[in-house]
Image 1 (tube, rainbow, N blue to C red):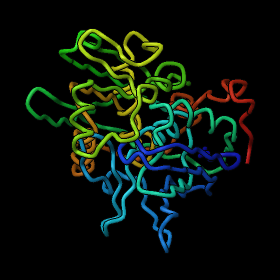
Image 2 (image 1 turned 180 degrees about the horizontal axis):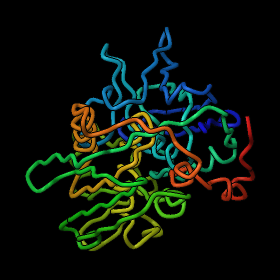
Image 3 (image 1 turned 90 degrees about the vertical axis):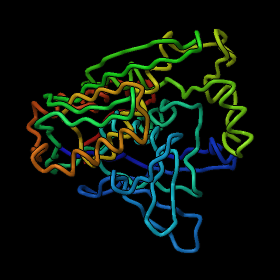
Image 4 (image 1 turned 90 degrees about the horizontal axis):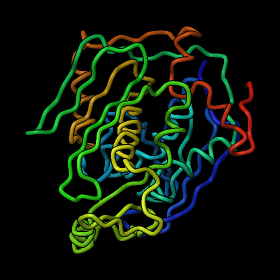
Length: 310
């Protein structure tokens, strides 16, 4: 079955790059609606479907573009939260060009969704099954999708800073794994990169509390790391959000090696450019039980909510 939110959920903060106040509201939506972003700050509201072919490539974030100059950036964390909680239909209203960064992870969005409740919709759910491997490369970096019976994510990163270094992790994303393993992992960067971005008018909303900032072997953010391998976990979180732009749950194994937002989008474009590489599949109850959002009602006590039927 498809699912939406039980009620509205509101989030306020600042944009990571603009530093401007940002407000986002998740609204329930009917079955078949999908995830749709709406800019509410314009004279006439503009809608942008959360889909791979509406993405403008960017190394720093995932940016949706309606093709006429209206954009919404840094959508990856809220998309990951929606996918990780099994929300298939929602209207995402944003009062500016950037989603609030909150604490730099997807956890605040997850908590808000769980507080709002998960409303099941008695309409069949379709998934996208990957039939054969698809890969894109750029030098030493690559991203790959391969056939699997459920979504798996594997990631490897290498940084010269000893605080990060080489990290790798692989997870089966079924049955609440996103909530348990990835949702609270924050975006990260090097102090030198922060200095460079700010000289170019970027990362104006970044702080040591909404990002993990490292300098060599030092973690500069107060309280240190939430996980020893928080950096690779966050890259997996980003991949979860970027893959959600496929428009339906993916039945595939994703592997990323030094990959980023732009490369994952290139991978989706390569997949959908090849009709022989994928197929729609109606989800049986057994298949639904292997999807990322299955079982998240068990985490309802965390937010004082339960899943409800609609």
